[in-house]
Each structure stands twice: as structure tokens, then as C-alpha cells.
Length: 155
Ligand code: DQA
Image 1 (cartoon, protein in one colour):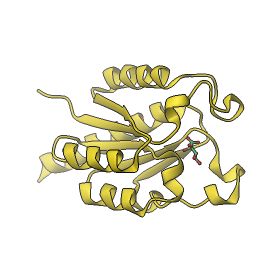
Image 2 (cartoon, helix red, strand yellow):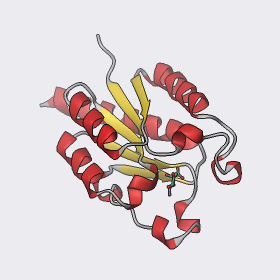
Image 3 (cartoon, protein in one colour):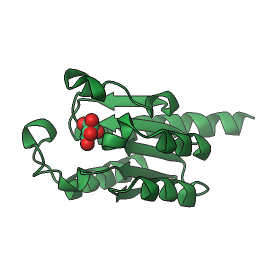
Image 4 (tube, helix red, strand yellow):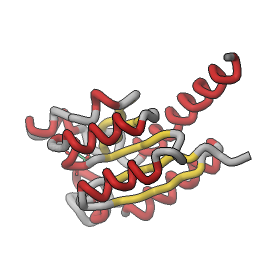
């Protein structure tokens, strides 16, 4: 049987993880985070499709392209969190469970980071847990997906 696939999407500047403001975002690189996600996926029986783009349209196009194949989405929209109605609309259109992740505690930071367009669309939000937040998000996604499939089985 095919494993449920989870799209792990990363927004702008996250390609610079490890060198970008390490006091805020830590010293792990995005490759380290991808490896952590793949390890968690292997443990949780999820296939991980890990991607990053600096372009809003690319993130939206990936959501459109993969929408029939993915079971759920873990997303760190980075700065688009606070600006992008288009990304929130795309996440709504996909109609799959979404977990929003932020490495830093955005609520301890500038006021413009306190609002998220994505949160209204998300089943859950993990904030300020460092890169471990991605693993926590995948654990939550595994729970949501198994509850969903148990419900389907009971119908
Ligand atoms: C971030 C928080 C955002 O405010 C910021 O623009 C980022 C990263 C985080 O992971 O903490 O790029 O999403």
C-alpha cells in the first residue's frame, strides 16, 4: 500500500537557514530540516515531499499541482504568512489538512509578525519550537490522517 504523502512547503529565505539570523532561527540548515522530516516520515509511515521556494507563485503552483496526490500539508510560509491572501486561498482550495509551522516565536517579535493569513486555514499551528516544530507538525499530521481514515473506514 502507498504511504500517505505530506507536502512540506517552505517559503522565502528559508533556503538560508543555518546562516540567516542564527540567534533567531538556529544553526540547522534547510537540508538538516529536510532530513529530520524524512526521518520522522519513516517513523510515522508518511511519504515526505519537501520543497522550498522564494516565489509566492511557485508555492501556489506546487499546491495546485500536488493537490490530488497529497494527504496533507505542513507549511512554513515564512514572510508570506503575514502578507499573502493568495497563498491562504490556495491552501483553502486544496481542501487537505494544513499545519502551519514557525521556527521562531513570532508573537515575541515585531507586531507585523503577529498576524497570519494562513492560520485561519490551518488545522494546527506550531510556533517557537525551533526546527523541532516540523517534526511536531508531522506527528500531528499523522494523528489527523489516521483519525480521518478511521472515520472513512467506519462509514
Ligand atoms: C518564520 C517567521 C516569519 O515571520 C519570517 O518572515 C520567516 C520565518 C519562522 O519560521 O519563524 O521567514 O516563518
